[in-house]
Length: 117
Image (spheres, rainbow, N blue to C red):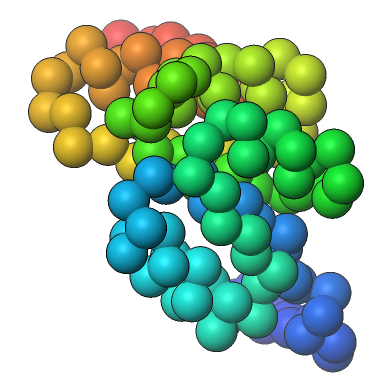
């Protein structure tokens, strides 16, 4: 049986998160919820907002809407994954096509391997 462990200081587990969602109500819901979970969360509405934020703050995680005005979430994910390989990225989309999901996963996955048959 594995031993259980926890962090003594809850501040050690706090993430710095950017939510990039152009729908203001959804953006606010994500920011409020994640802030309530103890994370430092910034709401952005576009790629330009995110770039400005990132110039001033270090971020651990990006939560990206795929359908953004201007540069879309795919473009942002690709750009940030190439520049900052260790940053976490979660993509949000209403797109239901498998090709869109595969494209998004190919942009954010750090390591891809084929499973043996």
